[in-house]
Length: 381
Image 1 (cartoon, rainbow, N blue to C red):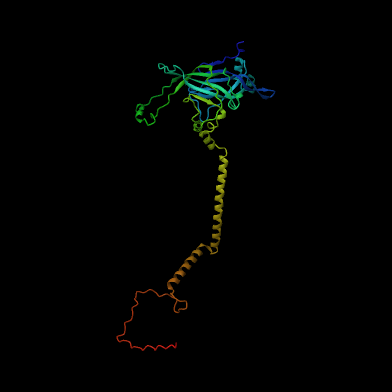
Image 2 (cartoon, rainbow, N blue to C red):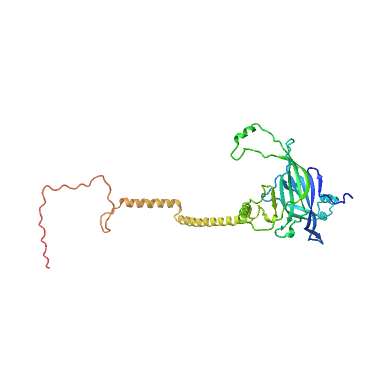
């Protein structure tokens, strides 16, 4: 009879390390396998959470996703998949479901859904115990809907005020790191932006309590963003609320590399574009074709030049012919005579250069006789 009783809202499997919890979801959508097909229905179901401490006692997982001490948001927050249990789920059903790895396990629950959630974290009241070096934190998780989200279709939102949220209280003991020689002198190397080599405090965690509390999330109406909100969204400043203590994760608002419309997501989509490989092949092929055509062009004219040179009976004959023609041309310029007129007789050889100066002959000692000038003929006008 004890095994047939419905399980409690919170069940301790391993104290301090492993717990399960179920949260009643009122009039929520679920799929049920009927007549060899899944059919959509609406009704009351129990959302099943598994809270576990990691093997190294450094992180807390919820349904195999890292949620504490820091919820990762790069590139996107973790997706949480929850089983939807049938009302009246018993301890025997729980034992069988935890051990079952076959498809027949679906008879113990309706479906598995991926939820939108509201996450909050912070220190618990009176959390620090300086005598024992202990600190306490608490984080909460509230299922607020599923795909495509309450903003697009209200029937997919879990907005019943009677629904509760999960809260986990965690206790941490500071891990004493080993000291090394000269560590005290590191303060002299402090930089402009803080102490040099300052290590983050590490804690060993222990789950103190898992409970269901009244939900804190308020379902806002859908409204357009202001200019300031659009700028803040583009640079990714609206992911967290209240200094990293509150986060609303709606899967429809997130891409693969960040929140949709943000610089991070746009840059990630650009870097990981699926057609980069094809674009590289096309670009590389185009460059290769251009280089090939240029090489064929140069090869054609080189072959043509070689064919002309082969008509001179080889390169030796070519060089001999070039030298001979050059010598003949130089000899013709050195040995030839300059002529002003083509009909000018005499040798065609140019006068050779000598050191003898061309001196004028001396004048005769006696003056030359005067010769009468011829009479100017009179011209009859």
